[in-house]
Image (cartoon, rainbow, N blue to C red; front, side, top):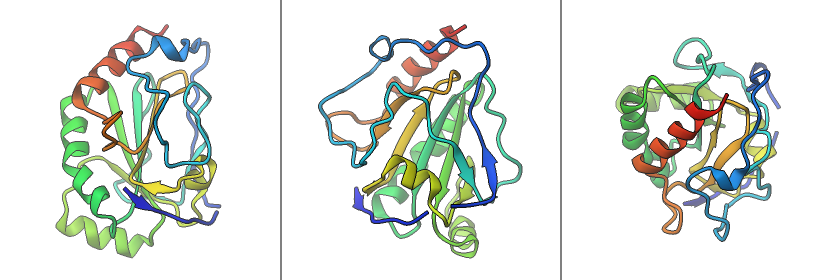
Length: 184
């Protein structure tokens, strides 16, 4: 985990909203660890996700998120733990491609991230937000910082994905996908 201190604002916006879906009670969602450090000032678990605003998608058009579980990774090219997470994000994107959208958002420049991507395969959606809107909404204090959002727009997981108490794993994602698919 890397400590982070940030700023704010941007242009292309992706908003998560599904009409008619009823949010499940957070404790009904596997897994849910309450006694962990989120490395963020704002706890969105069980609440509507903040708007996912980005300046530019470096991997093409905004992803189709309808009826899918959405994993958002706040990261940076200079962050060792962020770089360590990339192969897992690639693996999850491939393994769960029907049910999961993976999005990486960096506050770095387009040039910095694009250059990094030439030597590091990132087979999921990548965007930049130099104004740090998502990061500020979450109050991120350490990266990588992940939120997982169900199709009803509710944050089901938040925090440092490599946390010993609440590591984000393939098994946990599979559980969340099953719960997400069960939502009406």
